[in-house]
Image (cartoon, rainbow, N blue to C red; front, side, top):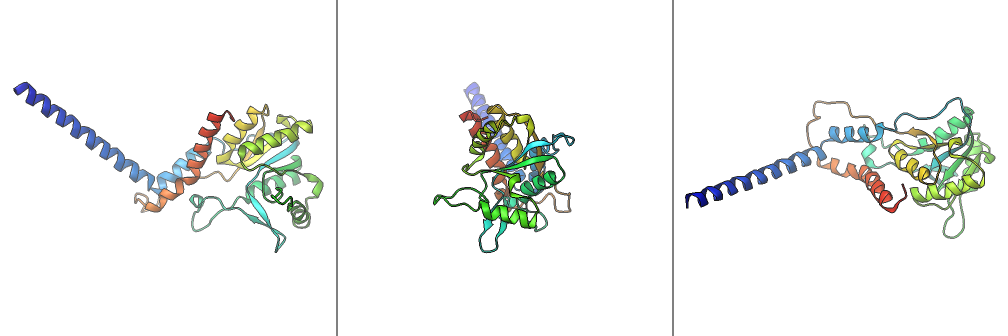
Length: 253
């Protein structure tokens, strides 16, 4: 009887330990997921591997490839409307948009680093279901306001996601006889890894110029306070991580 009671007591103690351990882990996880400073460091950790451009500034690339999703043409004004990043990138009330994908390419072209600017899968030029496109409106805007002539741009007008961006762009590059080493990939730092791996899968290895890499928040007096609103900020990171897992499973990367 004594042995049985001792075993029962040990079993109960072990059960309590498991429960307390589980509660501690859940509490810690809940705290970290609602702490803005921790979230900012995770974003920094995610972006830092590709935060610094890997390219040759003495080289003139045949094509700068802009991954789409940065904008659309506003027909009423004839100007570009920019797609917003996820709210997770909001700092000090400023909600950054994706314009740097485009304007970094324009800047590099003006500095003589790019021969062509290839835009893949963006609504400034994509073909709609009715067969129309705002490509000419975009070209007019870029010539008038950015002083970039129409012949600089090359468009891939069909893709709807990163895999299609790469697949259809690869076909264009191969048709034009442009090798991967003659291209410079331009996109958000958090998006570089998946994009590079997709191109590599198509036999195109290229340099890159990343934009909008995130930095950790400055430590404030209230850095330790949890905020339930932070939970919604994880969407963009989870999308990129999930995308990488899906692409790996499907053999896209």
